[in-house]
Length: 144
Image (tube, rainbow, N blue to C red; front, side, top):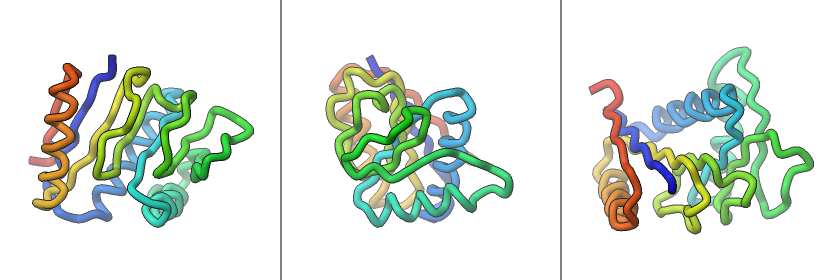
């Protein structure tokens, strides 16, 4: 069964949230965890795709936007708003406003919340959903 970790950031900045996500993605990649980054829409996926190329000088994280076509190699980070492909369900970084579907095969779900009221409200709903599903949840307040 999956474990869920909520990371709560001190600012309301979406930019800071996305940069924090890039750091988690980089850490996952270095640990040989080829995660799926779940977004709300293609525009958000594209923004994160661009940011992964520029957030840290010298950093290289093989990644691509998932549009329903599986990549030729599995050792890549996928970013998308579509259903998580089977091979990428182990670790999901959730930047969307909803819970990922079919998480029974996932090991880890990482939720990143900025400090805006809208984000926290949606985060609380996802927290309750995970809690009702009997999933172990940990919370990390970053920089508080």
